[in-house]
Length: 331
Image 1: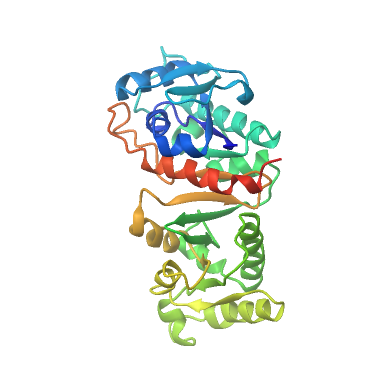
Image 2: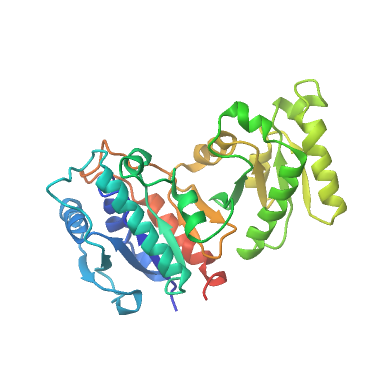
């Protein structure tokens, strides 16, 4: 049976509702997943109107009530947007709070086993802050609501998988976080994520931090003092890992199938590699949690919200990836 996937609508003022509507009209999505949207009826009706999508809302209270047929969008309506205060394309605390509520409800459904995965849409950090939501983004929300300490982020695009040793810190601070102990901890946890996803064969590669991986200390000593010792100790423990491998070649080699994954040492290193390859099909997976979360990796695009021109490709890919891996998370 096709897995059930919850889709929080995202920030009501952004492109989330639009890309959800468009994605759920695609036959490739219907063939692999049963999707239930968590959002606001008024906003979704508006998105259907301006996208001219051939789809109708079906209001439900729980996923099992849905009619998972072509032309039907099953919606759990939280009715939490006051249209008198709402304006599409604008940062709004009400919308930030509403977006959080959709995510929280979707996580609740996954935690209880009512859905097999959650595929998320864009949220806006300014709107979250204005709505007094004390989380910087999806990863932190999922971590808190699944009681997961330090969830891992993995990107997948065209079969290439990239993990991140550091995320939202300055580049200067990221360099300080490249330590032997942190690398060892992350590699072990990344391996656990891969096994949970069903990826049990292959070698993980660790990207170099400095040009040419430091050239044995000529251009920086992080590789000599931390990356290489971490790799040597991990191999001694029986873990299939190599590195450091220069960041100018490691992603290409992974794309060719040489490695099953790459550990990027800082945020932009892996983001540039994946998004340059295919921006719209770079999908984020949050790992290390008891539930599966896949996500688009673009923003709310407030400047084009409501115009009917936003691309649904990333949303489609996020749902397809959620369906692909969800069998390992069905409770």
